[in-house]
Image 1 (tube, rainbow, N blue to C red):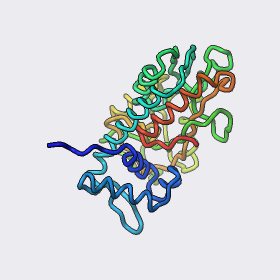
Image 2 (cartoon, rainbow, N blue to C red):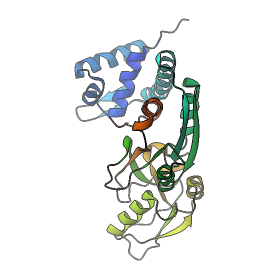
Image 3 (spheres, helix red, strand yellow):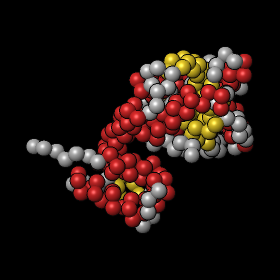
Image 4 (cartoon, one colour):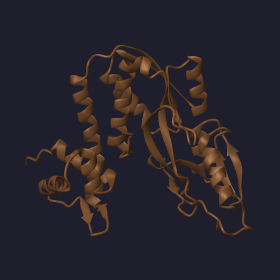
Length: 295
């Protein structure tokens, strides 16, 4: 039996609708009308013989088949974009020392950088993963050329890459006490050391909500913090798109807002090297995670 070929254009439309949460928003993102988006989704559904979205007058959601297709669509789009970029991108040569904050897509970072190295084999990339404030300080000292790091609250410096929703997370079996119970056990927290923006945001948010808390686990490594949370020891704060296995969101706790990831350093002075890397990372985030990149 010969199966039909999936159209990359239809898959990109489908993934964009899923990421944007609606046909109109997807149309704005792709420069198409809502009716054009609807037509593309119908063509995809006709090709597969399955519905990929449940549509009502108030909401749009993926069907079970749509959830499955989205995983494949993101992988296929990432591979398509990698292949096209490899074929048509101008040669890029040089050396770039890059610092990456440990909160920045930790599960996907190695794969993204590996694909980048295959696409641009003549660009020698040296990567250091660490805490945002330390990486930015290394940039200022000239130890690193660039750093992908968190912006501080209210800050506008750096070239914005993406905006991520922050969420409280805990192990599946973690028992959360009623936040309104003033006499209850303080909320147990696992955090990076002082100076971490996520830590500061968490403590400020809990103080405003008058929720008692205590930091029971501190690690200089994000992996160490995640391990403590996975073991059920405490709660922490992560980006919604990067939740590791075994952790769940805690919607009962106060909202934490969003965090901006940006590139810091002399981007203008090394634009020939920086532009391909930034574009590759943005495209990879959108394809792999549905994380909305900066415009």
